[in-house]
Length: 129
Image (cartoon, rainbow, N blue to C red; front, side, top):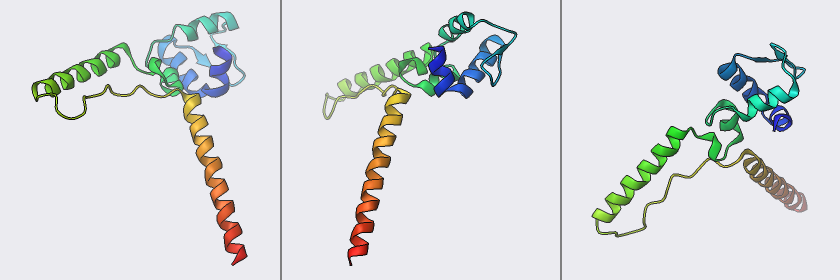
């Protein structure tokens, strides 16, 4: 978990450690005050839901417990309203959870590849005219 956070979300990890524990993460992966990798890993695992690291990583852990409760309350109020209105139309849906960062990156890479293929195809067609 620590290595993945350092590789993919260093800035958010730095912000979360500073905000939660008052620990500065230095560029070389060391900390002030000095911590062992095991200690640092435990601290990262103990970061609260909704901190900068988890928001950037995405998924259910990106939301605080309060945000999860609010999401559920909104859904239930919409469901009650829909039911009281005669249950006509599509039933309300819960607000979607943030997608995990690796899924977002994969989708963006797929879109970029598709765009490059289209641009190459358009360039070939333009050169054939």
